Length: 72
Image (cartoon, rainbow, N blue to C red; front, side, top):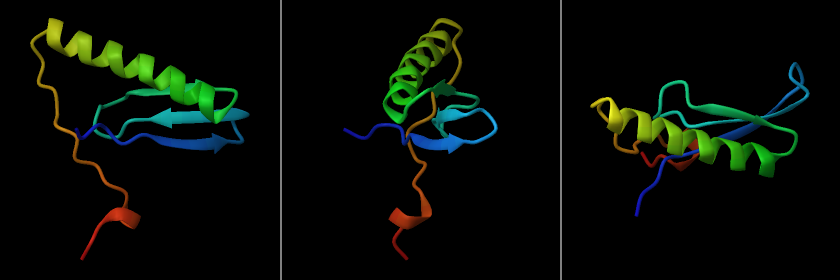
C-alpha cells in the first residue's frame, strides 16, 4: 500500500518540529519532538480525509516523492 509522504523538520522560529503532507493542501502539524509532530500530523491527516469525504471534495492520490528518491 502506498501512503502519503510526510516531511518532518525543525523550525528555529517555532522552536519545535513541523510535519506536513505535501499531497494534502495545508495539512501540517507542530510538535515538541519529531515523534510528537508525526503523531499530530497523522491526526491532521485523518481529519483532512474525513472532511474531504464528508464534503464531497476530491482526495488526491499519494504522488509526492522527494528528489532523493526519484530515479532518472
